[in-house]
Length: 309
Length: 309
Image (cartoon, rainbow over all chains, first blue to last red; front, side, top):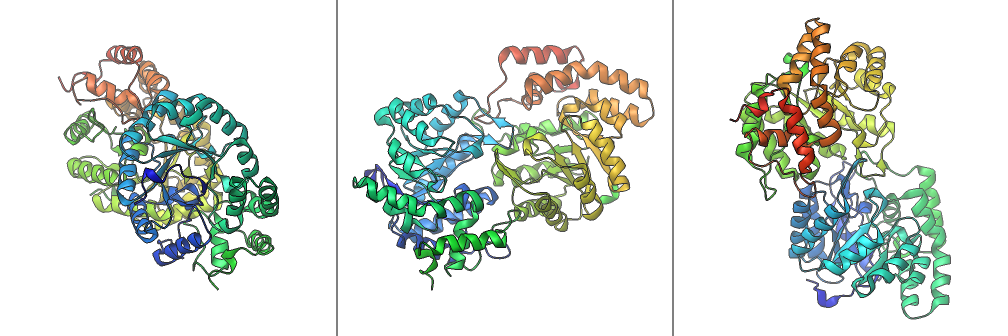
């Protein structure tokens, strides 16, 4: 089990997609093979049950099953962030406690929301994160993403960092993330243990310039994106800029044309998993879009297209 | 178990709130007492696990527990609609099959969605409802509500009614519901077995005029709203209009000031349940708002303020 002695966490923590078979059942052998591939990419950690893991089409039981199986399989090779988002404070706290017990290094949590219309006040959001923090002894990463439909002010985030023990990491993936990260670091100071970004690294370079120390990216090509973060951390800005600009066509293609489908299409194309089909009602990539993805990736010779062959 | 031989269903099917204790655990004795009270209001049926039941803060296990306990307790006294909404086609179908096995008369299902941003195409929505229908032998009510963030065109709804066996009921609770109901009936014809409305009956009279045959209302005062539907169905339009206009101040107060909190506040005030507190992060009614609710209700002398005393 990873403990907070490993903190502060930094670097690249890609999202593991959830792997289904053609009938929409979880394909656990391919799921674990996908995890092994990701670790071989040289990641600093990984993140499971995120939106890019199709968490919103999973049952509670499947979430628990995946958490246990993946954490057992990883067996401490890298720290694992488990997404435990739920609209209920009580259930999010229970999920987070269970994830910690199974060996999670951190939990990632969106503010409470439901659908297009159900949103909570800042006071309720604060109390929600306090309830989650009170249930665990590992860090919480607040996920600030458009899917929650909730504006999280820098002031609220900084206050949560100062006043709620485990709220220490922040995955900022809203428009103009770099500016928000910069203001968050300025406002929250040392309480902001991990100012991170997300969204497939589409804003990574600007976010690093703003002070980001970690990134939750797509799951398929951390062998390409990881060196950007490592170059930056080593002080080699020129190498980071060059690496980012080299990868940007693929990052952009994933971010704008494919979303959560990109990682699994690349993994199936590379023979890592048997089935890239998302769980219905999500639908597979349009064939022409998929061709464009593979072609764009192939120009960069990523491990994903070689590892399983 | 109610079967489709009871169809077509019509009349008032209020939403049963989910009853928690002060710590946020389900209070089953009060839950079942709430159900008994609702049946004593003279309802035609009831609806559980809806948004007004705080379905979005329940675990899968709690949903199953509530479905089983309430259906066993109702024991066929009235038909029960079970909300089985889930973003996954597979899981929504499984939930619906389980609800049918426990004795549900009908399932209510929103189109698939997640959060503020994840929406599906009309083709995916059609296939989603077909997957649900294929799993069961009881009717599906399509819930057309703003929380799903999904525009369901009249053409899509009518096509689903014609082409998907169990898709037969429609709870229209979007702005200008009456006009949509009228167009739905005109377009779908006999395939629209149940053109219903919802939203606390705030648009009930206009919807009845448009052809609505049923209404999913708040849970606290069906003794007041039920007679409106019965007068209408008996052809006594004057009595329906008078009843609606008499109840409208309370309906309006629930709809605009309280939302899902109204039913439980009235039930606690009337001694039917021990605790009106919603599950966190939802917060109780503002005290002044609650006073206004009780005062507005008291002028109409509803059963909810007398039944438990």
